[in-house]
Image 1 (cartoon, rainbow, N blue to C red):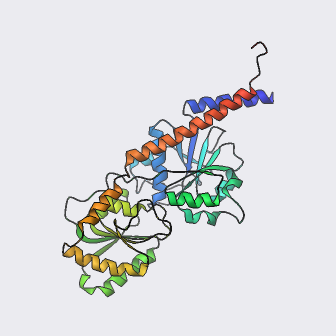
Image 2: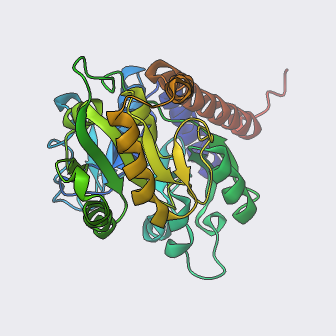
Image 3: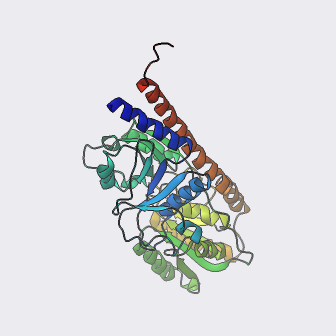
Length: 355
């Protein structure tokens, strides 16, 4: 009877995968209305997959979930959602649960669930914060990982050599583009720590009183469209984030034909080169570089080579390419899982003595 039950479950699971009814859950943090690039990417994946016919959901922990309605378009808020606290996370062997690297405690909670467990690692710096000493993702049944850069893949492989890691590079939406109007004396500034933002602004005005008319705009807590609009109008972007993994902001700025001044992160993103921005090793030099940049911008003395390199850099980061990569990845996952199910069904199926 037990074998018959297993055979029935496997057959039902295979049917659900063949019909794209197997569930794909992307666990997502509640940012309480704040725009966060990693959350945006989760929603983007679920959007691509649902449009391709997959049964994909945004998964969240608590019943109270503010969501992304304040900073993403309505089409994202209307995607399928499920809640762990309400008991809506119900999975079988045919289903997939994708957990961000920051949710080590959830890996503990779901380790006994009969599903494929994966990690979506967008910020390598948080991996070890959420793991007890001596523990690995493998201890929680994780077999696969998606990440966004080759450097992150190399880092993760060093920690968890048995886990299969795939790189899918994010895209930059088409609405990140240069304003049709001339650039304005506006500096778009994006840092991980708001205190760093204020420090740069105050130091700049003290060291460059001749530019006291220059305006800074902290890029926190904006809708995606407003974010793109401000970048399109700005004469330069300032980026400070040493532990950034992919670095969305510089690519968004380059797409708007807005040069970037920034620090070099610890792990070099795939897109970064010496020619496509004004990069510094020492963050204390950013104000000095910014002052020189404003002087050259006012004198229309910026090198054409910089803009050429920016255009080359952003060319590969198209939404259609990202969509194709995401859908293809999950199609391959489904195909692998279906083969596993077929092999298990064949082993459990009774042998016909007359065959």
